[in-house]
Amino acid sequence: MVSYLIELARGANRLHELLRKENGVKETALHDAVRTGNEDIVVTLLTVDPELGNYPEEGTSPLYLATVLAKYAIARTLHYKSNGNLSYSGPYGQNALHAA
Image (cartoon, rainbow, N blue to C red; front, side):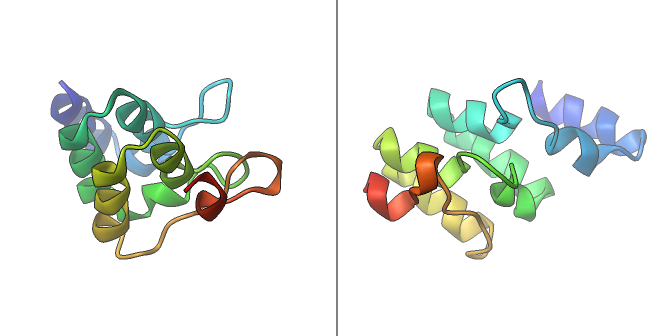
């Protein structure tokens, strides 16, 4: 289903806009994939938008979330699929190192 929705967004030329869209608590679909521990969806999202790990610009990053939830395989996937270009930020001025 995720792949199908990505193709629909791509067809409408709104792929990055929709993937980077934040919900009411400033999280993207990548955050949900991390939270549920679905590495396949994490890989799919980062394959089509390797910079998705930088969003949201303010708030809790997907890497911080993966670390605090002890989803270390997903944290590694985030790092590799984004070529290391991702946010480490967390709440209250913390970062992924604090969470570790």
